[in-house]
Image 1 (tube, helix red, strand yellow):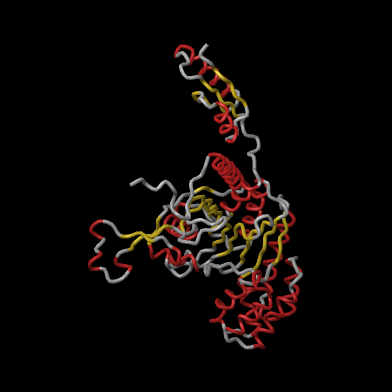
Image 2 (tube, helix red, strand yellow; image 1 turned 90 degrees about the horizontal axis):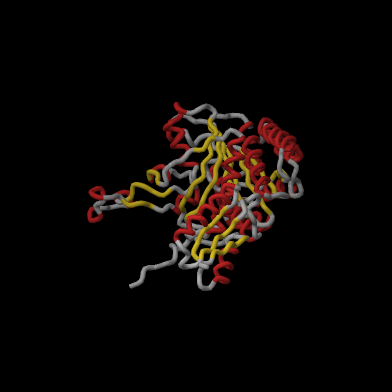
Length: 419
């Protein structure tokens, strides 16, 4: 029986052209983030299952690829529960591993610590356009910084990176979990219902304001509370400016919204707009929720028109490290949607700028060994001039061979015949 030559469903092989684009984007990301003072780290692909299943990863915890115990530890006949056969899991994001990493090495790291992680994560998700079961995440995080300087730096570093890759006219949508809670409290919802309400609110872009109202009513909430709640979003419908949004909310919410929260948001917007390098707009979005329950403050998301959805996001998660250490540590992070960015570039036929000239030396079969050294010397000299030189045997179907190499970016062909 022949072996299966296709990759596992939801995972993919990466061909040379895409790999070239991925390497280029990765180099831009690393160079730009390093210029902002972020330090590369690496964490293992697997984590203890208890760390991954701590009820902070939202829906992602339902998508964990779980790893069975090994050797003598695996005793299937006597197993009563899943815990008896599972001890590890493949990481579904880079935030949980980072928190464990920081908790384990805090005494060896500078404070605040600015980390950069690029690596594969795994989710047992339903594959679709731009979504895989194994994919690369790219995160920057600032740990130990309690002020909104962290948010400002993260937004500026991320948007500068996107601009240098070639994106423009995109949006960074921003909101605050404390604003979400203040709006829900003002409407009269009970605190224990907030998560349920926010799940419905998160569907706003798909079902609209009327759809949100209908779903909340079907969930058993009072019409009075629903009317007060959706009225807030109606008042903010055409508001994009952060400062304007804060003024409207302070006026409507009164004591439900702390003035310090509004000032926090205004300061972020003012600093980002005054110093941004890339061509983008910072937009206040009161419907932005972000699915992870570990967010405690500012949340943000990248919206690129060409993709029609989110291409990354992040926020503040001040209580997550405390689950490892018993002591809360200020933390804030931003993740670029690496795979979706690559998808967009590939669909646009992106060419890596400034790439070296690619030359193919086609050597005819039977070419004398004593003369082959001259070919290799010529290739060496050309490489020293900054070119990429491929030395290969000439195929019988030379035309098809050249077409294939042209598809990989080779633009010049030098032929060596046995004559």
